[in-house]
Image 1 (cartoon, one colour):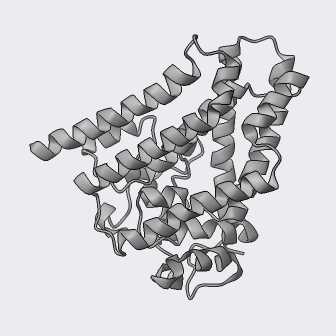
Image 2 (cartoon, helix red, strand yellow):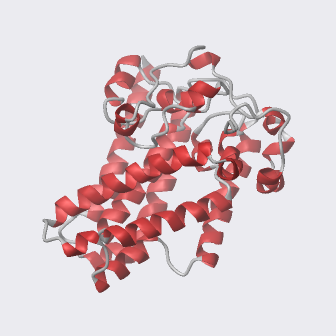
Length: 307
């Protein structure tokens, strides 16, 4: 009973953190757009660190599965990727998605800047289109061999926990940002909508990859809208037909709409096996090996795109 109270308390804290960071900060009428944009980095970093800490505590309090490798090995290298990815983005690109949204807004670029629709309608549509684009991009990265080589580093993690949600190769992060920037410019997405989308995407990635145990009733209820860890864990299965399902990061609608939704893994949650061939060894989890992984071939990559 005491553990149940603890888990419930952590979940309420998570919901509260999301509400404060997204609703009160981004859409508080006391904050003008310039204030929100000025503090964009603080908002995003604060939400990321807060949710990362909450998910980590939840994983300790109520883990869904036992980890195969020491947490310190995987966490230190997976989280180091976050700093490397961020540094490369800042060094290579003069601005990011929110900056492009500001430029498009100021210069009247993009579809939404040509339409006289209410701001909230355009903002909601922008978030939905961007989320659908991430879903579509995810599928493409699985189907195109050269893109799969970049993305498979995310799937080669021999365990599945909150840090798996930030384990992406710098090349994939850079290409994803370029795609996102082009779409933001084409849409003329409002800067506030882009910020909100980025917050939702970050929160969804952390939550959907967390090694946490949810009551089945709660998991089923959440899945009506939100991608849960039990749902996305199936996508990381070494079984090809399961990998080719549950591509969504935040909402379940796209998987349901396009026929890629899978309710359960054949082996059950405890029977899912992760990783890709030899890339699952301890040595392969070090940062230097992760960087060169796209150039190498594992002993067995059953998830590779078929000719």
